[in-house]
Image 1: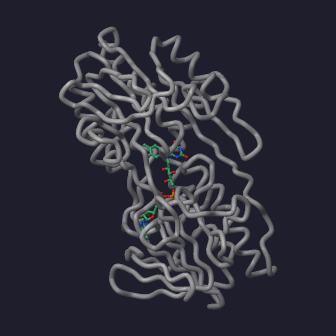
Image 2: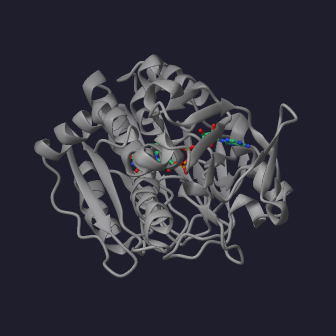
Image 3: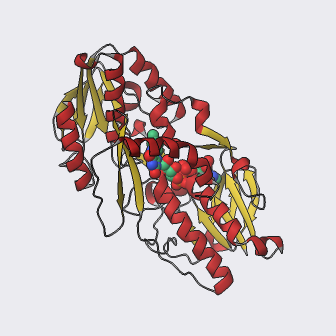
Length: 377
Ligand SMILES: Cc1cc2nc3c(=O)[nH]c(=O)nc-3n(C[C@H](O)[C@H](O)[C@H](O)COP(=O)(O)OP(=O)(O)OC[C@H]3O[C@@H](n4cnc5c(N)ncnc54)[C@H](O)[C@@H]3O)c2cc1C
């Protein structure tokens, strides 16, 4: 069985390692083969960008060599896929090679698109790439007071970033002793301050206590950089001195260019994680079109189910588990406190009061992630 994994991020890596352990004998005997194709020789821990943008983490802490994370039996190539020929069970790559497969897993992730809102890329900062997080840190460091507007695009990667970026900035200005000179204005596209109602309720209490102002039903339309104003689709406006964006995102261009899914989101069965209409193609992580959080934990839990199922297909002749929509997100809440939201397709989250223990667990997880990527946690 030739298994081809396209994408060496959180989902692809956890899947590949988990699968390599389950198929140890088959790989050794040459009965199974795992190949991973990725776009980078570096593996990035994207959640670390939240700390880079307030100067709490250095950029080199975000990366490990991808080969150092993979089980030795996995064949790895940095050679981005440019063409998917699903009817022929083949992909083609940037270097001009063709890779055949019996079973394909697509885990190419997603990309922030600030340029999709007129004026947003030029007039705002964000923490969605290394370069942007470093630039955000520079502007935050130089900020001497005024209105910080947090503007949230839809859909966006990681549902907790809008809240977390607000809380870590609040912390940062408090530590610098200029909180009394900073006004926070948080805007959110729907009729509450978070897409998950219980998280919104919890966060409202925190915002009220901290004096963070908020406006709901605010969908960014365009940014007037000359006058420092964000205009909403609803006809309202928000003035800013520093504009912090949570940009809208899309799946990778290669997905759309190959007709696999509009805006780069691949139609995926919510339980089996099969690409709709394909028996030997699975989809993992951000690039699915599933109506759940685009989060590393989603990719992680999906990868565990998929590894178990692919091993079972090989050893038992069929899959053994369904993905239930499980997601677990830490929420940094400021002042060395954090809470978390755990939920699935049927159970909503019930965040508790934040505390120090959860914050320190999140800090520990920022290091433990590398064991998790190796499939050890
Ligand atoms: C600021 C920030 C904070 C976050 N915080 C959290 C958090 O606290 N908790 C949480 O759970 N999640 C968090 N996330 C989200 C999390 O990082 C992503 O949801 C997760 O990385 C998605 O995993 P993935 O495998 O789908 O994609 P990725 O990890 O993005 O990996 C995609 C992979 O595909 C490769 N690739 C791309 N194009 C091609 C191609 N053409 N051919 C081959 N390979 C290709 C890339 O090189 C990469 O290796 C955060 C994200 C950001 C930006």
